[in-house]
Image 1 (cartoon, rainbow, N blue to C red):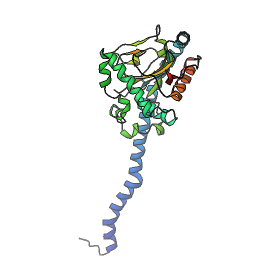
Image 2: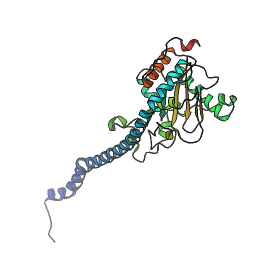
Image 3: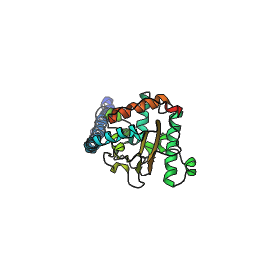
Image 4: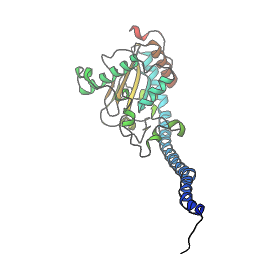
Amino acid sequence: MQRYDDWRVVAAAYVLPPLAYLAASRFIIRPMNAWARRWAEQQAANEYTNEVESVMRASTTEQALLAPVARRKARAEVEKGGLVILEAVYGVLGSYWEEQEKLGHGVKTAAGLAASARGARAADGMAAGTSDSASSSATPSWADPASEDASSSFPIPPKFEDASSSFNLPPKWMRVVGATQYLVVDGRLILYEGPPKSGLMGFADPAPRVTSGKELYVAYLADGAVYEVTVGDTSRLVLPVPKLDPLADDARATHLISIGELALGIQIPKKTPTSAL
């Protein structure tokens, strides 16, 4: 048997293989794995975006068809002091409230949260057929910061859900002002309990891979006052909600009126401060 007396050869035989493995792992294998994960996430993001854009295009077409009728209904309701939808948002509302807060519209203030919570409890009480049960209803799920994440069933790594900005994902909510105004008949809006509201004409599912937690938020004008209400996806909603306190924040009420005017293409007389009613 041949014997190697050169210690350098023996040392290289023991040291170089693990060093080569560590170098290849750090500078070749890990970057390739990271690239593969990023590519898979980007493909999933593209697939999700295409899925949402497809249903939103159909919804946009329906809303365009409903717009003239919704505008006529809104003008008629304004003339008689009836029910005018100022803002209506459907979907996972957590991201909507966050965006509104960033824009400085004050929806996350204590007054705003209390008003929406009161509206949700009042609507839940109506669905149960009693006004007494309204005061004991649970806080709406959008008020829980963990509700959006808990309701998600997206079948890819969690960081994808937290990387909406980097992947340019569509929002998980949609505006449905005109579509909601279209459903107003003789100063009343009735949405029955049971089917999800994504099936209503002009609506769509803006978060198709979120299985629960979708809600409908509506701000409306009735008898010169602005009100807010939030209900679950399958809950009953009847507007105007009886015994509901009007919005006390005049600045937010004015902002909501401007949204309604722009969305419906109408003019609403600015003659009565909402907090004074």
